[in-house]
Amino acid sequence: MKKLLTLTYLLASLLVCMNSCGNDEPDGLWEPMKWSKPAPEGLVETRSHVYQVPNSGGDYTITCLNYGSPWMTSALAGDTTYFPEGKSFGIFDENQVYSIRVTWQDETQDWHRLHGYWFDARFEKANLKIHFDALPDTVELRKLDLSVTAGDIFDDFFFIQGEKNR
Image 1 (cartoon, helix red, strand yellow):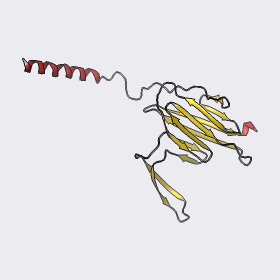
Image 2 (spheres, helix red, strand yellow; image 1 turned 180 degrees about the vertical axis):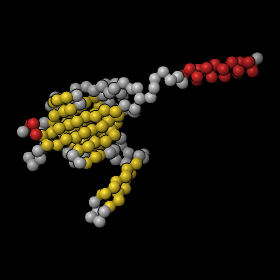
Image 3 (cartoon, helix red, strand yellow; image 1 turned 45 degrees about the vertical axis):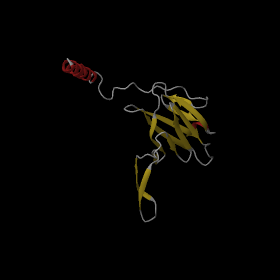
Image 4 (cartoon, one colour; image 1 turned 180 degrees about the horizontal axis):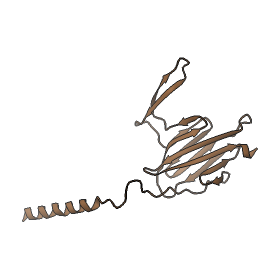
């Protein structure tokens, strides 16, 4: 009787496992990320995910409405690409300027924060909090392309500061 009960349990477990591994939803079929309007007011959305930042800068929050804890993948500001900080090393040229920088993930890497010389972006759960410094009089225009993800779904934000606000 004990063998029959064990065999029945194994067969039932096998059926459950086989049914739970269905291929009903292919990889990459995630719901697009949905976002709230920026708070407080001040960022002007000129197109979908394209924002005009006031010359005075400021602190803003945009909330992901359908994923609980997104993280940063990279940011492009001018000619500089920023990645979440982790361990890295550089190979220098004769002028001691980085010619190659390699960064890899480790336990110290913070995927929820990116910092540039005029912006700071971080995720606190589903809230993207981003700070922009004021635009100096000597700079006409600054652009930031911020890439975020929640797994197998990605999104980009484009921030433009200057030019139209003068």
